[in-house]
Amino acid sequence: MTSQTGIAPPGTRDQLAPGDRIKPLAPQRALERRGRSIGWALLAPAMILLLLMTVGPAIFLIYSSLHNIQMFGGASGFVGLRNFQELLTDATFLHSLLVTLAFVVIAVGIELIVGLALALALAPKTRANGVAATLLLLPFAVTPVVSAMVFKQLLDPNYGWVNYYLSKVGLLPGQMDWLANPSTAWIALVALDIWQWTPFVALIILAGRQTLPQEVFEAASVDGSRPWQTFRYITLPMLAPFLAIAVVLRSIQAFKTFDSFQVLTGGGPGDSTEIINLGIYRTALQSFQVGAASAVGLVFLLILSALVPLLLRVVGRNAEPEKG
Amino acid sequence: MTMSTHSNFSSVPRYAGRCLLWLALLLAMVPIVFLVITSLKPEGVTRTVPPTWVFHPTIENYSSVLSTGAGSSVTFGRLLFNSAAVSVGTVILTIAVAVPAAYGLTLREFRRSKGVSSWILSTYMFPPIVAVIPLFIIAGSIGMTDRYPVLIIPYAAFNLPIAIWILRNSLHSIPVEVQEAALVDGANRPQIMWHILAPLLMPAVATAAIITLILAWNEFLLALSLTRAAAKTSPVGVQEFTGLYGTQWGNLTAASCMIAAPIVICVLILRRRVVSGLAFGAVK
Image 1: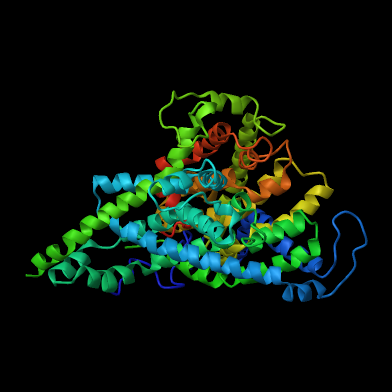
Image 2 (image 1 turned 90 degrees about the vertical axis):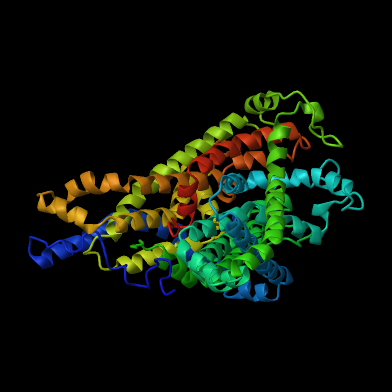
């Protein structure tokens, strides 16, 4: 039980490199210095590109959040922390912060539970399961903007399939304008996210499930383990690393969600579904209040930074090459 | 005794579970069925109550969208071309930058490998919306808005964490004995790179390329913010179908199918590779 599905403990594999154990022929010191500068030289283009697109914008954000920048001319001066001060008392911002968190937790939570159920159901390698897994890939492969457009048409109050067929089987009393009402708009957005991304979660877990040794399950069955016991004490702990990967990656992606909200509700009705991403977009690119948007962006960046240690632990450790 | 109770207890719920599974999968196919069916309907029967199921399939929606492109100054064919150009450009830039970087990270003499690769991985959490603000301003002031590089460069940057990690993991998994043997045979470093490592790295390069291609093709936020007409990509174009003419479902779904089809085909063919790649190679 101690074998964690071939995943290395932290830090043990990182030092290994293809160059290991090759005894250099030239004097050690000089070669090492050269190797080091070759390393930096090889990494330079990637690092420059990344710095330019991540650290660069972050610095810009710090600067512009302290100034009241007007996008089209006009005097812009230093305003200190005023943008942040306004943020703290801004009900819209606090609301968007809250709904973003709620969206991530609820959507990812449901995706994890459904994804786990699907993965376990599809684990036995039968022909039917192969077909099912292929079908499962389809929602995940559809371009997010396209799925949002499709959901929007399906939810159309007059011609949408959802209204027609739900009322036909008696689940809906009459006409319903899903996107005009905050609670049903949220249901639509979460449903879309679940439809699109549960397959990704399920396929990660399924790939993990298929690496688990079959003997453990056979032994448990011989020992009279009930299905629930097998699941609780064997399957779940052994799948934990894969569940962690799915949850961390999905959470990061869910925080970055933009397409479905922009297309389906545009933040509406009112600002009931305006997640942070959408709020920044509208403040900066539609109202041109760069300073205010930068302050929100900076807060958003800090919140997401809290996920970095999780990402490093889960992906950084598990992605190391497996050896047996 | 255990085996018999086992099967007795589980056969009924198992059967119910299978039914539920297939029901859920069928339900999940509804949007895709809607998309494909509606795109093949003649314009007269796309929006009807109740939905029309019997009709003569036609490709007139596809041809009309490709030639005119409802609600847009450029044709949808042009938008698809833009998408393809931006995606291919992104793949080339990403691979050209990621391969040397991954190799650098696995050099034995490179002491900062762990720290640098952790930093690269951590940039995955960076929300593109935060980069959009300065990009929008800078691109506007140097006249780069609505041109390919303004999308290709950030797309490549945002795909680097995944690409570099996929390649790095692959390089790590090449046994050192392979290189040692070549060294013993008198090969120098460039020869080892070209003749030994490159062929072994090709599957990982393919994985990184396909992941980059998918993410660039699907990208919406930067394309929406940084393009107007000339470099506009198809996801931006398709969501404009609602605005101007009311929604013509035939045109909309035909355009949607043309955006989705290449990626759906890629994913179906390269299933394992795509899932493993999107998980940074953390699952096989």
